[in-house]
Length: 178
Image 1: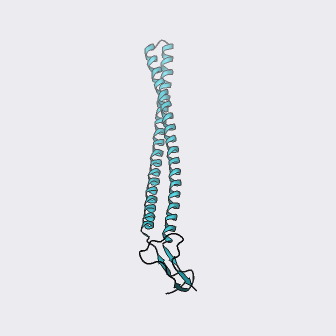
Image 2: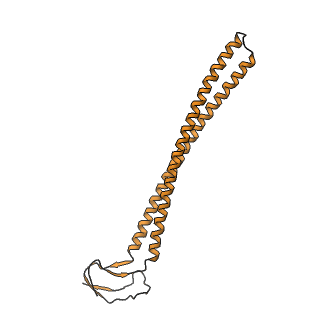
Image 3: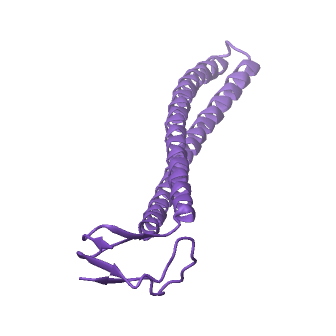
């Protein structure tokens, strides 16, 4: 049989190799969805940082008000115009406001730390995606080896393989005579 360079002279069963390519593509799509999900989590966590910052601003405003109130009541107690119990309540309110500010600061730190965790998860997911792309390239390369093409024009001679026959790597299948 006469063949030209690039003509397919032998086809091996590509079923398993095609399945490997399809599986690799599916894994890549799944990993890309994971990355999109992580991106959305990062965006949501960024919103949580903003919420925590707003809570801090509110707590600081309450703290400023409680501090001013405590100073006023202390002055009134010193002048004998107000009862000590009123001052004690104002001081307690100031301590609560101080605690709320500390809690709001901790909330900001926690929200920012979660953004860092999610960012690290995204980087890991990107590396996994790169590995999956490499696996796909290998699977596609393996699939390409299921078609044997003539390297030059010639005549196929001494065919040693028949349709349906099992072959082994390195087994002589035919000769191509220029």
